[in-house]
Image (cartoon, rainbow, N blue to C red):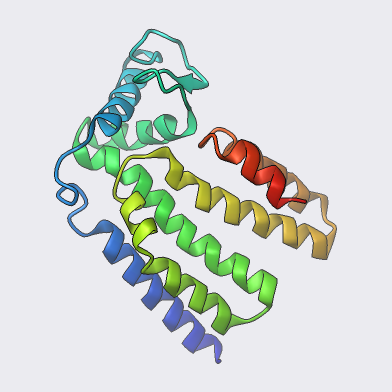
Length: 195
C-alpha cells in the first residue's frame, strides 16, 4: 500500500468510528443514567471548590454511590464541564474522547507489532465498528478508559523493546501508572499482559 492510500483509509476508518461514537451523543441512549449523573456532579463539585460531592478534597477515589471509583474519569470530565458547563454533552464527551483515542492507539500498536499497514487498518476498522466499544463510548463509564491506556502502554512497551530508550520505558510506566487510576480491572489485567 502507498503512504497516500494508508492515510486515506486511516482517516476514513477513523471518521467512521467518530461518526458511530459521536452522532446524537446526548440522545442515544436517551438521558443520563444515575452513574453518569454522579460522575458529572463530582466533576462539577471539583470545579467549584476542589472537593467531591462528599466533601473530600481532590480525592484519588470517588465515593459516588458507594462504588469508590478511581479518579481519572471525573478529573477528565472536569475539563469538559469547565468548557461547556454542567450539561449532558460535557459528561458524555469524556468517553467519546477516550474512545477516539483508543481507535488511534489501536492502529499504531497493531502496526508496531505486525509491521503491516493493512493489518493495522483492519484492526482500526474492526474497532471502529465494534458494537461493545461504540456502546461504552456513548456512556459515561470509566471502563472505556482501559482500551486506550492498555493499547497506548503496550505501544510504548513494544517500542522500548525495539529501541531500548529510557524515554519509551518512562512513557510505558507513566501510561500504565495512569491506567491504574482508570478502572479496577487494570490492577490485574495490566500486570498479566506484561508477562
